[in-house]
Amino acid sequence: MKTTVGHRSIGVAILATSLSLASASAKERNGGHTGLIVASSVYLFETPFDSAATLVRAMTHLRQPQVIGAYCNGAWRVHFAAQLERPPGEETLDLQIDDISRSARSRRPIRVFSSDIPVHPGQMTVFMNDFVISNEMGFAAGHAYEVSLWRPAEAGRTVLAKGSFTLK
Image (tube, rainbow, N blue to C red; front, side, top):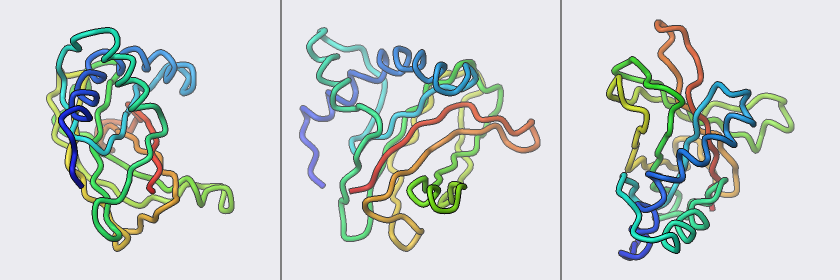
């Protein structure tokens, strides 16, 4: 997938500001206990924004749930950024992706992917770039997914942040 510099700057500009702005709505949705995860099809990293117009364009571009287009037949490249409510105090967190499209029939989301993510114990913003997911892993076009970060089981498994995305 070819990404233009303009799309990168949009993805970059939003992160520093929009994650903290959006965490207020995540508190309302999740009872005040979780942060927010933003999914994108462009590489994400933190940087200050250069103007209010850039920020507004970036917020529009990264609205939730984000639609992620395929970059190769049956595969998608996804980038995540999480704004936590407080530092995790751990060196790894569990990233979990559940298929919520099927949950209407089964009443339970179906776990599709899970992985340990290295983090800095004192950091409140976590970037997880370049995840390649595919049909072979159980992902499907047209399905909606919930992505979440959890404390490891031995640390008292607790959800720290949630977000969603849809595959196109």
